[in-house]
Length: 165
Ligand SMILES: [Zn+2]
Ligand SMILES: [Zn+2]
Image 1 (cartoon, rainbow, N blue to C red):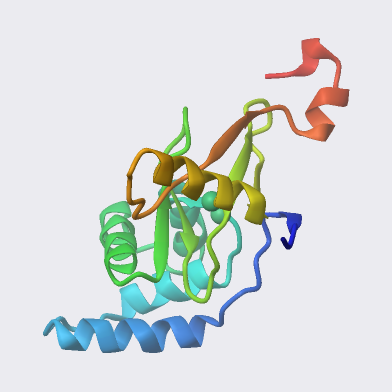
Image 2 (cartoon, protein in one colour):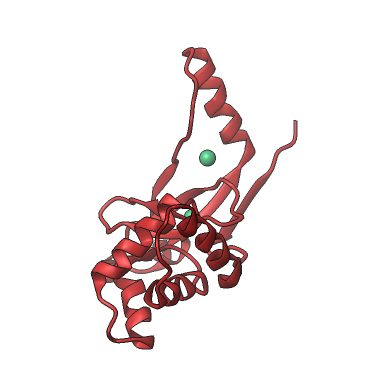
């Protein structure tokens, strides 16, 4: 059995914004929607960031480039990216919906620091296999899953308690 425990910071290999825009253009055209310059700019901004962005955070970056773009347009665009399978919405506890790029990403799970809000990604083959085994024991067929571990990251454990949020 191959044991594979990889943990890395939330900085996945960045798919190019160009590739994402191309995939989105195909998806949009197939649905008879029109391409818009604002949406292109939002998609471009999103795919040049890494990690897990809230709509507010993305809006900040977008309005720095074009102040005429509103929150509603960003929300709609992220919804489209989600529907097109290019972004994944994450609903971590105690926070807003966050989006991460889904283009060319492999399945992974998350560790979330409840003090600094840091989000760390991990892949663990043994955990994945164990989950399948548990499901099989219950005659259950799993379609998807999310594993989220909450606690304190290394840096926050070293910080004096009084300084923790
Ligand atoms: Zn998993
Ligand atoms: Zn992630």
